Image (cartoon, rainbow, N blue to C red; front, side):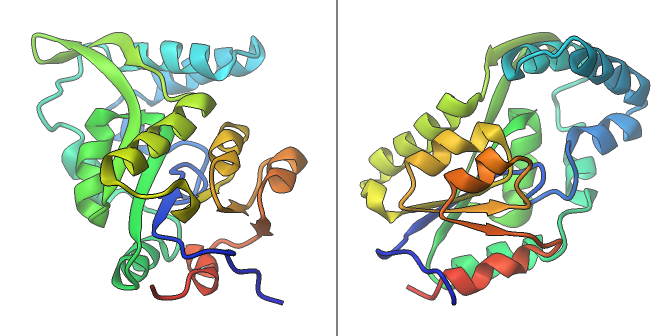
Amino acid sequence: MMVMPDKDIEVIALDLDGVLFDGPSAVQPLASRLGLEQRFLSIFKEAAEKQYGLHQTITEGAKMWIGVPVDGTLDPLVEDLPLMKGAEETVTTLRERGFRVGCISSGVSQFFMKPFKNRLKLDFAFSNILGEEDGKHDGTVEYAMLAKQKAESVLRYLENEGIAQERLASVGDGENDIEMFAVSEFSIAFNPQTERVKEAADISIQSKDLRAILPHFEAN
């Protein structure tokens, strides 16, 4: 039996890592292309061993980019980034059906999100905001996109656009998506990382093709 939203959905918020991107971190292939993979692996190995929370992981991860120019260095890398199977078609189809589609991510920064938003023609895109000085990353975090901030960001978007909260749907896979699920009228746990994530969503989908969510969103 197909589970559908109870009300007309207008906005769909998608997570990045594990949803639009097939993997735990869209940052890793970018770091590799920039010669920073060992720095990436070292930072996130330490985060795992010391059981850092999300905020500390973001703070430590930001240091990896120290000295990297913010002048569009990431743009061509983001444009070539391999995505989840069906990701681009899913976004295109949802927008053709009349939905506003966006991405909210705790795993990347505004320097990733700008070209990523352009690539997928997203209606909105929110992420961590990293600091810069003299045209380069300075290793600081000005705004961390934690679980609470994910929910707040999409609610702020709805308010600014004059759209009722009851028109929101979200798709995610991690613990930091649960608060976004809670403020959504309809939510999908896409390959949920834990049982808690699965239980927090209205439905759960196990698939390596993002087009699996399309039957749950009919044309407006």
